[in-house]
Image 1: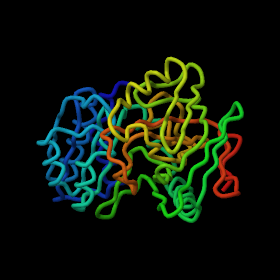
Image 2 (image 1 turned 120 degrees about the horizontal axis):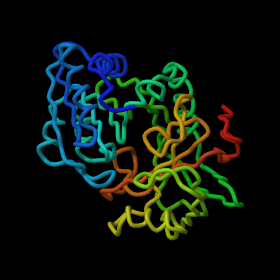
Image 3 (image 1 turned 30 degrees about the vertical axis):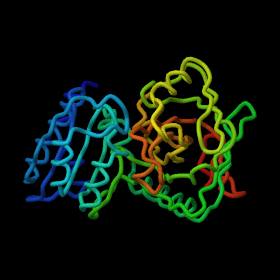
Length: 319
């Protein structure tokens, strides 16, 4: 469905239900040229709700995790509610982090398209999404080790000891709340340097889309050291040679029953039965690496164990 089909009325409903936007609040919408119709609908929906709304349009940044222009970053700091429908993700940027620290309620929407508003993940049962996500957040916070088996005999192990689980439920109603819209994931930053093993990515990769065939990744001492095939080569190109770019940055679990594997990471990583492993920057959610890039890979149907308890298997959440 064409992105122009998102109306201000529909956008207003999302702003009020997910971000508790109120009359008189300062709404900042940061969008780029590919997602401008959705950004415009959110801006107009905010005006309908009585917000003091500002629309900031930028050129696509070119990669997930790249900082927005300084003028946009300054606008973000003035928000009570900040919404970022963009082609490339602003989630793991210092500009977003500063807005959150200043008390803004922030929803990033990288790769959003109109279909998500109609029969996709935005239409999920948000109470159930929150229930699943918060349960997994507690389990992640309490656990010390993760084991992922993702096909072809591959195993990946890493420590999460001392790291706090994060919950992206789609309900961003308190000062400093941050998450994606649409949402539905529990995630954290694994302990740097601890990941060892192999991972078979079989669903999608940010910046590449759906995979035609599975891709094998090799991780040593917390860093991606090998990625096979054409998709693997493209992943390494996207990460580049910046310090920390190949750091295993994020482990997340999807919790949204309406999310599907479409090639759009914003939706793919929320699907139940998937996990996502990202590389690069994790400084905005509890890690120590600032890399200026953050690339997610999505795995469908893995077996996942927290300590010795299986929580995901056969495409099903077991908690």
